[in-house]
Image (cartoon, rainbow, N blue to C red; front, top):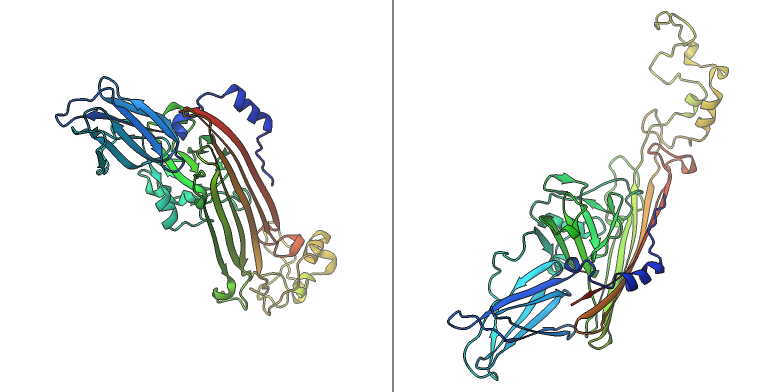
Length: 453
């Protein structure tokens, strides 16, 4: 089974020339706004408000209106600092404003009389009730991604449980159809009606997630469960938008590896050996600047090698049974060609021996594909450990460009390939659970967008 999703470079050109306006701006962007007042709670109009992204040195300036109100819309996620200056007042600085995608942060500031050379540092208080947005949901941020355990190939979808209204995620479909380890969630009682996106781009493949980035590459996960904007539609449950990390003026990187094998695994109490089992996940991230304050890059790679061992102890026909000699059985074997139609009056086979000419050639051919028993007895007489293997290779490359204070552009390419092989218990002839199976799933995506700031 092979599933592919490709984005041609032609689409990239179309994105540049036909949709160079705001694309999914609110999905990818955030807003910082507030009201400026003095000590008497009177509004302060015409004050200069400067905004700086401390990681990229991106800078914008606005002026408060007659109501003392200011707003910075369509901002990239990041860590921001606000500086407010006005004649007759001390300069006010508020730092560590952590802006996430699809969010609005209110930063109301109070100016105190004094000279502009004096600076007042403002420390943010406890979060207030959200009053500038109608949607509900939650966010999964870096601290949670870094510290909380995640199963299923370290899938970030394990953490959707932290959002109100979301039940525990579960793995849906088979390992072949769902080789990328998508996890299904029930949101507000709705199942399989969720929408997934990477930086605003649809990431649904049928009822599964197409690409699942490693948690080390994710900056934040925004989950909207109700009252979300129309641009986030086509979902009955939640809309989950993943934002990848971006490069900054400083260089940052990470490397990791996790390894587990069958050396410390307990043996099945009915088996004589431990099947070969190994799980090895490794990867890293690296990002930084190409041109300071202008051009940035970020990349990540993750590889997973998962070999799951199975102890198989089925019951198969003995060699005498296959030749028609059922004398070892405690059951009387009747000749179906004798007796009445209702089954009465049938004659047993002599010595529980079925004549060779009474055995179907088709059955004989099928029996020839089954290996001989490896254990004595009529039940659980065959033992063969098998190992299902799954290999996943994936990477992301992201380039951010700051053209002007009002124009920013980023291009991202994501790739994920999963290959699953499950050998049959009887080799190429299959087995009791339907093997062998081979599946390959490759998903690629190319995305470019520009949104005015």
